[in-house]
Length: 180
Image (tube, rainbow, N blue to C red; front, top):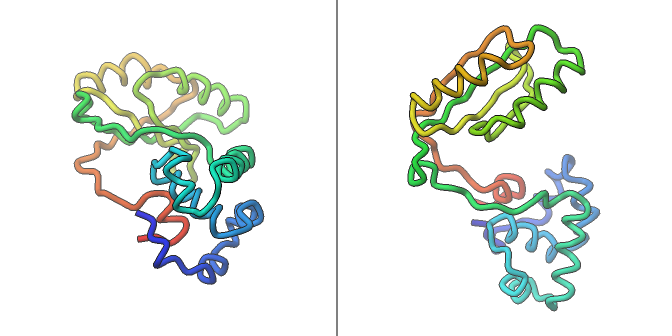
C-alpha cells in the first residue's frame, strides 16, 4: 500500500532518471497520488478525488492525461488462479533458430493467439523468449505443450520450469515510487 506520509519527494526526484517523462506529466504531488491510488486498484474517481484534494472534474482530467501519455496502460483485476481451477504456473524459456525481425514477429503473433499464455517477453541471455503459462493441471500443460508449444515457428529449444510458490511482493506503484 502506498503510504503518502512516508513518501519523500526529494528522494523520488533523485531516483527518477528513468521516470523523467512521468515527472514532467505529473507536475505536482497530487498527480503522483492519483497514479499510485489507481495502481492500487482504487479506480473510482469519486473515491480518489477527496484524498488528493481535487474536484472530480480536475481529478478526471489528470487521470485522462496520465492515460493519454501512456503512464496508465489499463486496469484489471488480479485473479486467484487456484480458486478458478488453474493450479499450474509454468515459466517456459524458448530459443529460436534465428533472431531475424520477421521470425520474431511471426513467433509473437502465434504466441498471442494461444490460450493459457499470459505473458511473453523477449529476453537477453541464453534464450530468446520467456513465457508465463497458466494451466489447470499438469495434463492441461502437457496438452498445451503438445498442441501449441511444440508447433511454434522457428523453435529449437523449450525449457519449462514450474512455480512451486508465488511470493507476495509490492505493487508496481510501491516498487517504482518507493512505498512500502
